[in-house]
Length: 446
Image 1 (tube, one colour):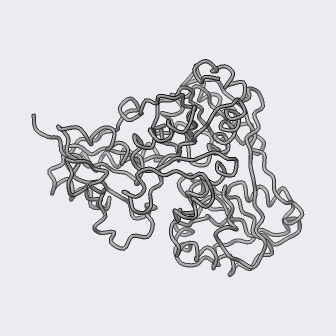
Image 2 (cartoon, rainbow, N blue to C red):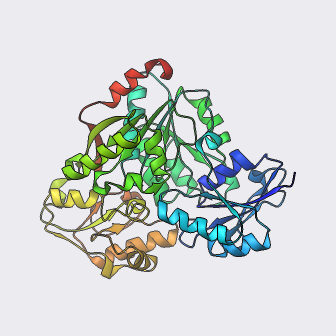
Image 3 (cartoon, rainbow, N blue to C red):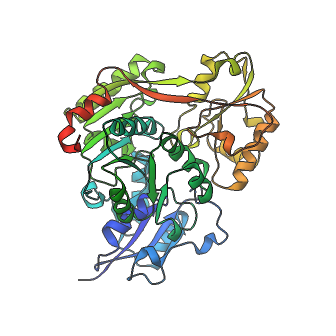
């Protein structure tokens, strides 16, 4: 039998996981390249044209590693490398856009493939509670934080495992463990990583991440009685879940059926949380209810609010600039987040439009995402972008910065005005997460 020659399309996350779990040890498969996009968050790399998945991770069959080529060269790679199959390993992509990529591949003469959950999910020796979503920015992390707290309250050692976000040296990031803020500082993580890790660490939970999730799983199993999977974007869990909770957003009702692999998550869920109901229209809530009942009638729906708190006295009457979670606004297509809601709720005198003051790459972000609603995405994938964020805030000259990002922005940027941190917590309305854990006490060892 001839060897199947493969290209894996992705964004430095699920693509590497698909390779590691499905293709690395397959003698009948040869991955000849990964691809990356121009806007992929790959950090500061001096030698991007020669970027490779390193041999230390690729295995014995790949002594030189695997090239990572620009996605714009996909057809060229298919031709030059006589590619048989292209594997699509992106998350939070509109169904129509998935098929546009499939059409490119088919027209170039190759097969187009998606890796299913049964092939890429790893089995854990300890119970797994998975938290995923149908889109970026639905409220996964606040839900995962609450579940981790509840499990600890029941006497369990909990490890939180986050989907990969490797932006630097891949071999050095094979397995990452973050127990303290000092661990984050020492690892020089990006703002996006801080947004996902800090909330867990603040509550005393250790976070595991990395590139090779078989190795990550082994480390996490050794440290914990129960794992909480905190998924990224709308990606599938990398571990087989014993309890699978999926978040939806009524502000983007209908998106749960229009994005890959979010719809798959919806169909796999044990529980579907309709979050942010306190700030959403009833019509959006009802649309999601109907879609859940139609696609996954066995799932139980949990209605929830996302409760926002901040120092209202520091906001009231002030000229504020709102900084929001970057991926929610960009990948997730949301016009704003909790920061703008807090500014309005606490009576800001004026919300400053940051776009006229945008510096460097942030100016390009506003051009690429015109849907933004007078908010500044916390783009910080490099030291230069963090400096641009600071410069944009200074140029806008607000009285106060209202930070809706999940991490402590004041730890990273230096501006001459107060930074008010917005916090948001999940508040269940019908079925509590505590009751969910009680239902599954036997399988979770509670």
